[in-house]
Length: 473
Image (cartoon, rainbow, N blue to C red):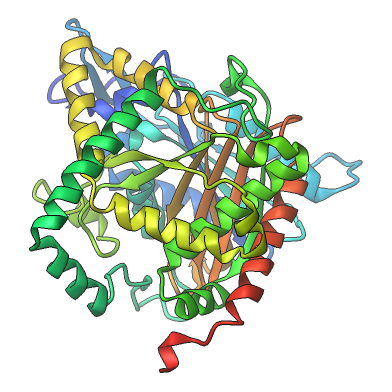
């Protein structure tokens, strides 16, 4: 069935960021995986009903294609949707040595495939295959032009319910800062020294960001091949999990935030891998590009609230990026791995005083008006390719979810289509932090990388347990 245009007037313009992510330079996808703790036989019909009656009505973009008008402006054009062309149910080969390997290869392959521009830019894959992690999985592939992780997570949650009581809403970890932190920040903000520091950090961070996006490349290391056309090379996707309780224990003992701890573990594990693969790279100049949600929010809003024109957390791509240097593996940090947590804490605290993120957003907007969206897309492509890794995170619900009465065991996501060798995505769900690695296949040893991350976590946990828990005093 072909997609026929059914609306001639009033089509929605594509946002600038949506155009960046669907251009000749960039084509970025968000890949989400839902794992079930029970077999999912018969889920197909229920899923089709949810897609038709819940998913499609959430946002017109799910029933639209991106078209270009006579003036060259891109717009969302509403079309008829044939759900059967968007839902795939792969059949496992009869001779199969490992379901886990088959699923990993399948996930990696479909992540690399481009979605046809003649159809709405999303797909769902219902995989009725038992792996070591789940009795079945549903894979969502959504083009980043449709929205960012916050928007698409909101859409996904609209199709899910609380497993224990569907009448109750899902709840999420609070994003509010502690009272002590709030008071401290308020006092600093009122001082002249904070204003001076903010101005200095803004200039430094903004200047560094511009240089990293244009002329300064990270060194070639075991996590950055630097090859041309990395986005077209085969990828591998794998995951590992950490206990939020143990991460919270580290946080309490050090008096930092969950984000500080996770960032420190990721940086330490990355450097351990770099050292193991090439000892000289432990002190190489390497940068992580951290994707940030720019909404001023404390949690997820309902879909209706997101689509409100006056929403505090509107639908769309409300993201920016921040260059963060990956701390080098010096001798002091080898003997005391907590140095990576303190380094992450200090960097994040300092970055909060900088206005480089909104300033970068303003610059990209001005560049788009002067040179066009394709030029900005090439600028972002350069930013991604010049960095060593991309880091993104989402907050998931505290309670177990269910899809059509099938309890959800696990949930994770990643990004695909970008010109980087390593993407690290982090998501919380039911007391577990799921870390996902999207790596350049046959370049990064994903099993060794995961082993180094596990080692980093264990070393940091062991060192933190030697410090008294500050929350008990």
